[in-house]
Image (cartoon, rainbow over all chains, first blue to last red; front, top):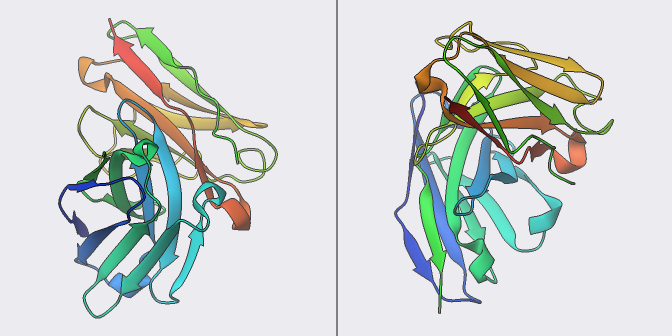
Amino acid sequence: QVQLVQSGAEVKKPGSSVKVSCKASGGTFSSYTISWVRQAPGQGLEWMGRIIPILGIANYAQKFQGRVTITADKSTSTAYMELSSLRSEDTAVYYCASKGGAENYWGQGTLVTVSS
Amino acid sequence: QSALTQPASVSGSPGQSITISCTGTSSDVGSYNLVSWYQQHPGKAPKLMIYEGSKRPSGVSNRFSGSKSGNTASLTISGLQAEDEADYYCCSYAGSSTLEVFGGGTKLTVL
């Protein structure tokens, strides 16, 4: 059973960056695909991107290209999502998820609030 | 890549069946049998209910079923129960460039 534990809530100023972590336990980290999905207050789910840790290759949704960076540290079984040039519309709960067929695990979510 | 189109809300009485549609394009839903459906209760992370169009993960009730016709995927919940009241999201593979796209979500109310 895979468990994903995310870092705590963040409050950021507009224009700054935030880096959210997602630590995996159980299973083999390098064989996962870790996706990042966000959910603004009262809104739907939005796919941001994913990384394949064993390859170190990340793919991003067009909307976030140039503003998001997803990385993975195999030595600590931790994935990271960094979002830059934050604006108020980036206020959301950010989830990491390990998804592959029937195997589907989500972190608890990290609330990022962007406010001046 | 635009989000997949879902009805904003559906409702049904206990014991009834409801169907939630998810309309995409020939670039996503229509091209791949890789639609998944998630259930989300308030304040909780999404839970996978259907994957690869019609497969149920272990532990998911057989009251949940998925299907697809052309560019539209559907989730059917039979024998509605109060605990089914939640938001439901479809998600489709959308090719090697975009990878994944979600629907806007459907709020299910059990009357």
